[in-house]
Length: 127
Image (cartoon, rainbow, N blue to C red):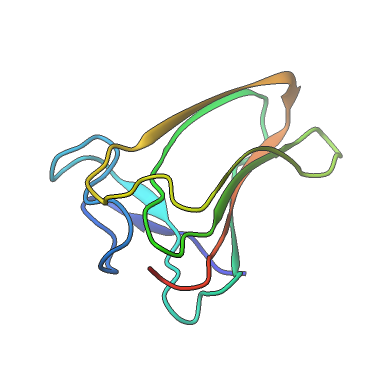
């Protein structure tokens, strides 16, 4: 396993991957977290970003998946005492250019859940 990285603004450090800017656009488009898949973080490394426990009825998030060897991103959730279940997933690249807009996902859960997490699985390379 490995950790997500917080970036206060701008593009990711690896060329030919990630967005040009944060989800708000412009040079100060907002901070975000990302998974760096440069060596030794590929292939198939898993990173979790887990929420605090609470009452989750819905989740709204923005995501940007650009890179030739993009892996997968999952949104998982669990009920109190339950197992993690996948509620959303994106496999492979979504954007074809780093300059493309971030996508937005809106998820409404049928029941109130206790916790959510993002799970990233790196692809076969870092770009």
